[in-house]
Image (cartoon, rainbow, N blue to C red; front, side, top):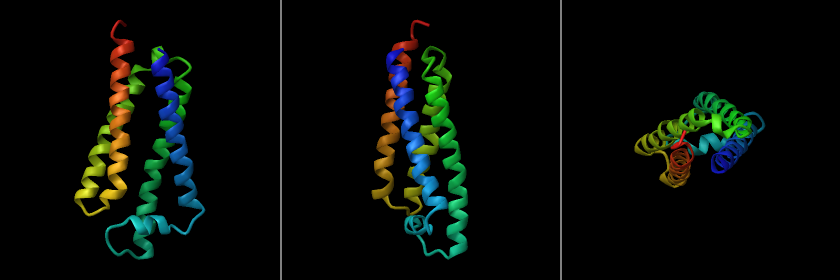
Length: 135
């Protein structure tokens, strides 16, 4: 279960890092980073609405990251969590980013994240198959 343990730690730590960076942007910045990512002109109310919706995603990311670090203590009991994260990466990662690109958001911003999502998905599936196939 060594690979699963480290997958949970690395991906969970990455999620928590993204959570902290985004919380800083949400609560301690002027939200310009959000205005800059929108593919259309937006007034302050639209930017605030986007940031508020983004906050829900960030809280979810933080919870998953914390749970992954906790679960890494008992990786043999973490298959369902790994599969949950893989499915979240498929839908709120790859699919959502592809939809955003299709709606005019910057491919230069989202294609690198699609690659990261695909790496997390592929390694999660690989490690589940390797380490849980005899369970």
